[in-house]
Length: 385
Ligand SMILES: Cc1ncc(COP(=O)(O)O)c(C=O)c1O
Image 1 (tube, helix red, strand yellow):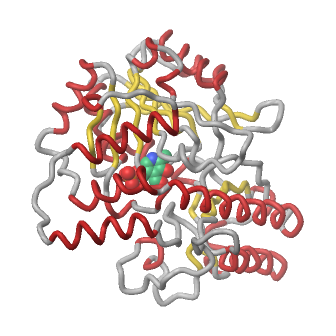
Image 2 (cartoon, protein in one colour):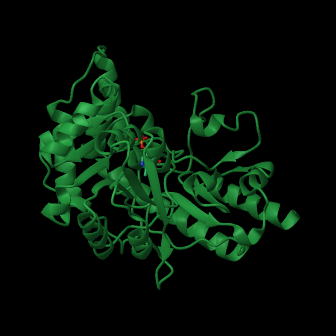
């Protein structure tokens, strides 16, 4: 890229660093385009802040402190027009533990949890791990062929004992940014059925379509805010998941206390590098994020055009956010889609754990040349079979 000081075209080799993404196919000639972990080095501003923290030389127990708290509050206000309070926050080592905790904190053994699929697999695992019933409905396509929540199906499926709705906004894996209308309707649904809304907004700063805008769910109304647990993190946007720093925002003091009680003794503290990375990401990361979005937009457009012209057997609907492309491969008539592409050198995420049979998810958060290599291998595999 020529118009930015940041380089997304080349990335360091991750061999020997225990990378989940790359070690899955260690010593195999398979390009990993699966788990939601980008290949890019993070913003140099964040690396410098981490270096400074490293140079301090003391890595003791760390409690939430003013600088990262203020960085989060400033970011929420600046980026999302959300005027949150410091005591609404809980720092956590990840959103997945938070989703699991919510199933324990708010749902009794004879109550149920609802979500809309296909969705990030831990949404489906969390109720199960807590021995709570899971109710799932499928997303549907609207008149514009966009994925959306199927409110008729949700009305039919919700039960008197349903306690939670877990929302992914923006939605992984379909890349939708829900509109005010869709979120308002969901809020009405939660109020009508007296549900607590768990709003996972981890992808909210990864919107590459200029026509889409993220709406922080709690901003819709005070009554919805009173029944919502918002979950966010700088990890997806700035490629910091290994630093294990996320946070919940719970306005309702009763829900917040229930959550905090469930955490006690179970969840570890966020480590000093997590706080330093979070603070730097929100205070200093914006120029890098803008450059990243521009690069991701290019990668998305390349993927979209390539699939339409070279692999029309895959249905790939337009998306607005994330770096995760959701492919419907039904028409390819492959018995084992993920195995077929692995055998031909491309490692994709299997749709089945997302509740998306005959679907695959491709991570385009990588150098463009690597993405093109993966897409070309997919096309070649299909034409040679
Ligand atoms: C919707 C969603 N929530 C949570 C996570 C992961 O959260 P964490 O790494 O903080 O546990 C992901 C990762 O891809 C995700 O897509």
